[in-house]
Length: 434
Ligand SMILES: *[C@@H]1O[C@H](CO)[C@@H](O)[C@H](O)[C@H]1NC(C)=O
Image (cartoon, rainbow, N blue to C red; front, side, top):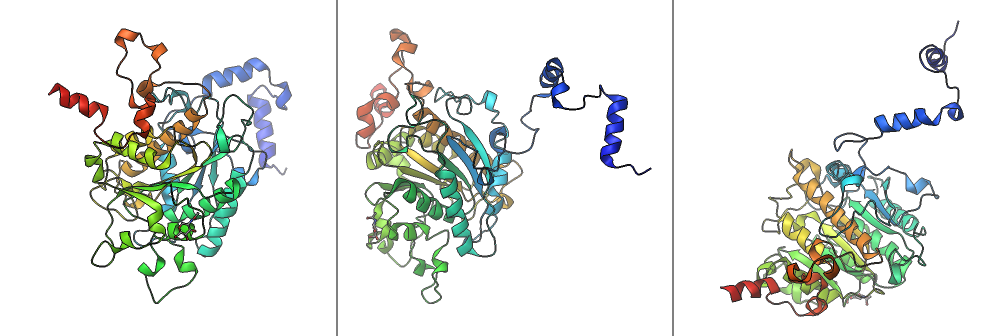
């Protein structure tokens, strides 16, 4: 007798179980029992997806809808120094394992981003070719456009969901990949919003380099697509709003013998520059937040792209990256700054340049990147919550009795958001007390 596997399984089924032949016969209580017993995941169990969200291949399934899509861009053939960021999405997903959706309430924001109004999905990776960067650019652009033009689950007419120019539109959070993935992302956003995008760029480096910096003689059109020149290209293509964009966390070396790179006209000038050291002059993370908001504004009609190169952090806290520069911000400082930016009109974001082979056993870099993604997603969800949630940093008056109310957090004091950077409230109080 010829026995197939299916045959064997069927035999085993008859002998050992209750012989349910198809789906419908299985009684409800049996299903309930199974769910009660096994529908649980530990932080360390399960197939690795971002924050244990059910992974879906959104690119091949047009029925997949979301308000926020997390998408991997495993691409690293445009780097100038250490490669390896193609493994970034995997590492960040693995490092996000302690973000259990049921236990991901963000105390500072007053919201659990995974169980609020927004449908958040891990849409898997874009299968990007490692053989041809021109083709890779196109694949990423088309994938971002495909995912970014699907109508959001939450319609623009809903009380919840994003307001203003991105109402009813899905938002993408890209896990890089080297930083050049931001160029196709900006091209797609330009298509979607039909206007130049404000770029808020956290990085040790400018990434607005004219490609001649790398070689004046050996040039091709394709060589301009690299992880140091993509903002130059983006600016020249008119994708970047020159009046509202900003770099934050800079500490790069320039070319030549003076500040020429900063003084020369060019796309570099379209960005306000905040250096890593400025955090001290500005009075800490809050001062950085104020300076950024003053530059970018809180305009619901102006889309903002938030691009976080993990090398904005000091190599002590994020060693696993393509072009490390000592003297960067700490993880706490970066997270505090990002939390302070929750009211920006962020329509898309990336976390890039995580190169796990240079990370350590404790996954320090990938953990930081996963936390950055969590904070960005939290802020996106909070922005569309349709009510003033308060949250620990911006507690509502009504939630706290007057007499025990803390000083109003800087977040809910409007004037402070637009005031020029100066000593923070906290600092002034500290000075007065001394
Ligand atoms: C921004 O500035 C660059 C360089 O001057 C220019 O090429 C580009 O067109 C400008 N972008 C917009 C949107 O005006």
